[in-house]
Image 1 (cartoon, rainbow over the protein chains, first blue to last red):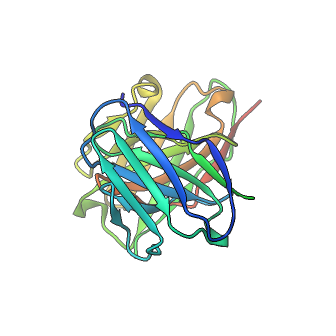
Image 2: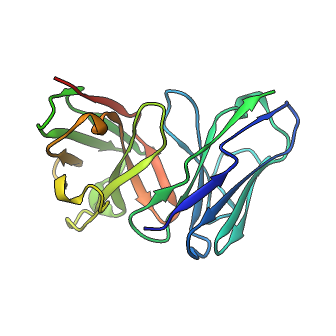
Length: 107
Length: 117
């Protein structure tokens, strides 16, 4: 199985801050990297696919980058509705695997 | 608009079989895509369980494979999950979803299954 490691596990930030979350794969996954946002009691929401493609309807303050083993999710200016847990997932092979999540909290 | 809805018992006894069904609306399963299950224990992260294609081709998580069966009923536009010999470690919110290389989307709302006597 491909292991996905996210960092940090949690972070505190203020409205308007630039936030960066990283995800590392245990082997090359090309650009088969997905980012999700999950709020309490809700199903995850797909934000970015193919490492850097923004899902329809997702605000442009979200962006993704990377290829191979190292990837980044950036929120350019944190908004109140962005406080949530973020997960990366590889879609290169099965079993699909997720990072452990990064909880973004209000400072 | 594609929508998925999980259904099944919310409480299962240890050693018994957990059974869930996902009903898909707004899209015919026979048209393509893999359809699958993901679970999330309370307060923890996401675990991919497995997927099925309309032809019946399956992909299972090796960690669950010995206890897992995913099946599809294209006539009802449904797919199902059976997990046998459950323990408390199988307590989780179970989501059904459409799975592709461009991501898992959309998701059902999720259903909490508790394993307890």
